[in-house]
Length: 333
Image (cartoon, rainbow, N blue to C red):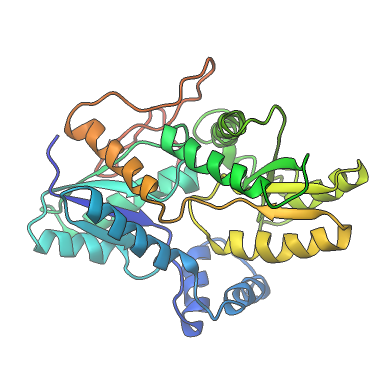
């Protein structure tokens, strides 16, 4: 398959205090989130000057992508500038006819996969009938480079805490109903599977998987246990040191730098537990190589790169122009 360009498609984030509230309103539009909840989350961003780290990380990743392959790289977001609709129009104006779309989410699931499929369809519709063909690349939670980056991060972090630290993986919680949309527990099963791969590669026979950053009403069941509650349980059972690996995030989102590095660290200090957080891939050159390998699977018909295991979990394949990428795919409602 021939490509004229690469589109890095991401979530987006504010880059100044005046952008925080409009950004959060974009993210939560149609979800009836109370204003006081938006005010509380806004304070997380304002703690860092109103700047999310994600856009800067993505620009650095784009530089890495430009260094390791021969196609122009475009940048588009779902919730903030540069909006994907504007980016796809620019691609059309520049004569791009077909682009590979690399998303900054490794997983299947509605918010982590299907919404990106919808973003692609919406952007092409905004441009019109001559919009570039956009091919979303497959999920990559079990790609060897994904596992390698997190395993090396865990190993490096282990040098900073007392021996015998408990390894705890964390990912963004979602409503249990949402975890069923792409098949029974597909998102949580993929996270658990990747955690097993990383733990094994880092030499750990045991680990825990927990969830973080839930934002819904208490009457709606979400994936549990929460990372803070789990830390308390570990302390009650005599654990003195913990390595937290945010395997659900490929970059340092606010949910990493605030929820883990700030709030969870404070909680650990109150419990007198030594806590260290493993790095995310961010703009690691290997992350760019991972994207190129996914592109080359389609460009040159290369075999899919996956960590071999006896019980692999299914993932979403490539999709074109906002069409379903894994039948049956996530329901819209």
